Image (cartoon, rainbow, N blue to C red):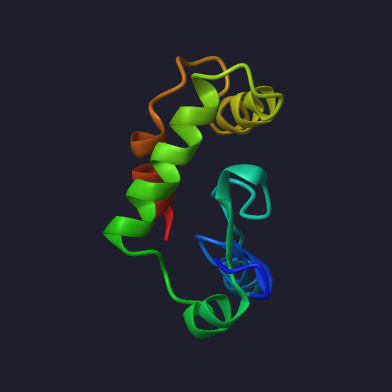
Length: 107
């Protein structure tokens, strides 16, 4: 990204899924407005992506980013850990790849 590019925050799994499912039944997946699902993006790219579901490459990048944070002393590590334990209470936390596959299956 260039210094003059407009930035946006992309919901890798579109936030609109929670509203869409909520109007029909109820959303049973994790909070899509949480850190684990957010990524920086060019504003124009984010507008183009809109409500599209993530592709394989986007999911791999998100999993790799989240795994890197989890393996570091970064302060956001605890936030990511809490996100996973909310979805899998009392169970061993899976890898981010497994977590994202589980989210995909709720859609």
